[in-house]
Image (cartoon, rainbow over all chains, first blue to last red; front, side, top):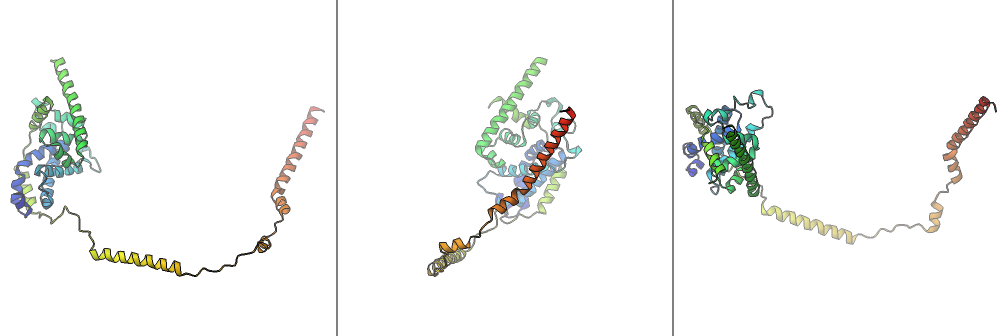
Amino acid sequence: MVRAAQAGSADAFAELVHSYRTRLLRFLLTRCSNYADAEDALQDTLINAYRYIRSYDPRWRFSTWLYRIAIRNAAKLHTPDVVEIGDLRDEESDPLLQCISDSESENLWANARHLLNDEVFSAMWLRYAEDMSVNDISKALDRSVSWTKVNLLRGRRALDAEMNSAGKESQAYG
Amino acid sequence: MDKLADRLRQDADKIEVTVSDELDHRIAASLRSVTPQVDSGVAPDSRRPALFWWASSLTGVAAAVAVIVIVNTQQPVETSTPTPANIVAAVPVIDWKTETAMLTGQLQQELDDLESDIKKAEKKVREEIGL
């Protein structure tokens, strides 16, 4: 399918990325200020991936390559030259919180966004939500393997502490 | 699987997203309008032909030979070295006293003025005291 896409078949490419769309959108949603931006980022990611499909190296996992493009697109959206008031996240307009049902308000990923910087958040997401290996994460983030290991550990510690403190609070109030 | 990893995986699954039909059509339409670029990820070939390196090597060798030949075949230029007697004659005689006077003349005048002012002030004080 990759070869057909590299030969210029848009249908083959669409079939190839079909299973990744929802996963990519979920990831992009955690990095964008609203749902529409996440959808635009998904569209840009897939278009860029298809445009540069001939530069895809089969030694990489396809998902790693796709996430690398998605991370770059998200970074472009995340650091605008001018921050508009409407782009600022708040509890009511946060697209991630809107996609988490009320009964699951204590979602660790929502807290992770405030505790971790973008790169560490992405590394944690790829590791725990996407089950990627450390090598693949370092490729996707264009970082060294040691950087990835260290920052995954830091992220884990931060989220562990958050999870434990939330647990203690709920016990205290419970 | 540890507790945190389990929790993170479960929480990721709880983020409910759906790719709408409208977005799906938009993506499909965009993909049809794009054509994959040929070798886009590869930088343009900047290699020079082998002849270029031969030509530049020969030019360098030729330049080095030319410099060596010029340096070794050049006749030493005879320069007239002045004798000690000529050097003495060539050195201008400086009127040191005149120059010193020119440099210190203004300072001396300033000093005289200050001394005169001090004397005047001293005289005035003596008169006021009644000495």
